[in-house]
Length: 65
Image (cartoon, rainbow, N blue to C red; front, side, top):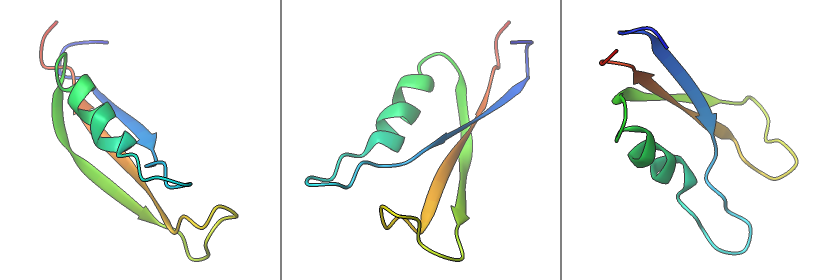
């Protein structure tokens, strides 16, 4: 990636039998090599089959070249 380029990664927490905070585990891992700029919540008008009414997108910036 070019310096100062942005990357948006979409992920969902795993919520089947036991909650797993996948989104923020991913955010922590990515923030070790890039700058985590923020989070975008996408709300769906209807729940999808697994019951998730929203998804999360992490905005990450490549601050170094």
